[in-house]
Image (cartoon, rainbow, N blue to C red; front, side, top):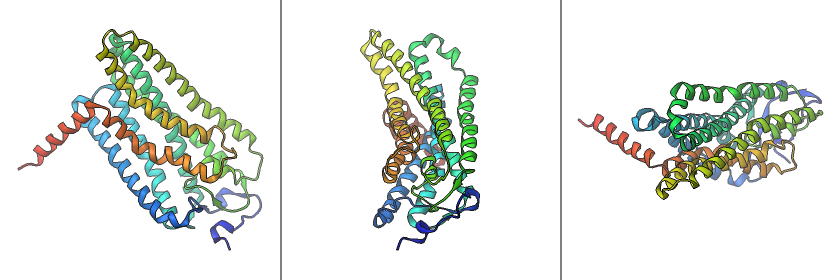
Length: 323
């Protein structure tokens, strides 16, 4: 007999607001749930530690006051918000299977997921443009990328995803739902919720596709354009050390871009694609859990200035607390 949370039917054409959702993440491997909970808890703690460290270093150390580190701090804050939204609910799903979730909680999680993904996509685009200006327009870089513009760009990135997340969350939760009340995922995301809707969702899916193009395909195109110009400029540099320094400042960002866009695009370009729920969970893990953990490692391990700032802050704080 299936567990009660996977079998209970809804009344025909019920609204999401009348129901209690149950996340069924990793229900296909019940014996692995305790081990997965330990692994994901470790990933969550490392994510918080690494991104908090990036925020602290870029806030305290005078050597990390360049626009590049200002945007890196914003990216770390987005990853912290993203992890706090996803990881605790994932751990509850693994340790307390079958526990219900209020529709308002599910809607809030979806809204934050959409907002954070949108903000991260735009921030990665701004960071690519920042590198383009620094390498291709070095004489004008300081005048263009002033603190006022940096704050304006960061604020725009944070706010741009809010109306998108709000509109699609309200729209999705006003569809009629039918069938099992179990969401075959570890978080409230558009694809698993859409699979429970018993209505024509073609307009909704088309709108999601358009928004995905705006927030992913267009940013990816702008990033590729920026790095094409950067590569041309680097190849024209006479000094091998100059070429190496320019490319090393871009390598970390490129790795993060590839990790983020390759996974989010697979899930959100085709929200009702015929991928199995299990495969969608694995792909989603890469951008909801793995990428936020790897970002601070990628930026700190490949960046000498960040490592030097870590040493300076450690020595300064140690001297402060030494009697």
